Amino acid sequence: QVQLVESGGGLVQAGGSLRLSCTPSGRTLDIYAMAWFRQAPGKEREFVAAISRSTISIYYADDVKGRFTISRDNAKSTVYLQMNTLKPEDTAVYYCAARRMLGVDTTTTGYDYWGQGTQVTVSS
Image (cartoon, rainbow, N blue to C red; front, side, top):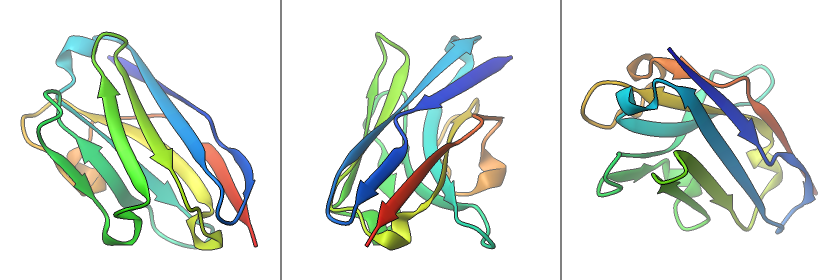
């Protein structure tokens, strides 16, 4: 089993920045890809960014490209999401996810483990 713990959420004004962190514990060697998803009130959970273990494969949702950066420190087994130029529409609960299988997936069904989520609120 793998447990994921997110941190770094909070309240920020539009145009500001936040950095989210996700630290796995347990059978971390089982993890191949990790990703961030988000869910706004009344909406489905949506893909934000994903990164492979080697960090060679990285994917972003179109509406965060150029503003968000996903990175991975394998020595610390931690994944980060640097969020810049935040907009009110980025407000959501952000979830970290981990995947055992090879490949990087942009769908929720492609991930085996999930964190509890961290709230990000962007005020206008």
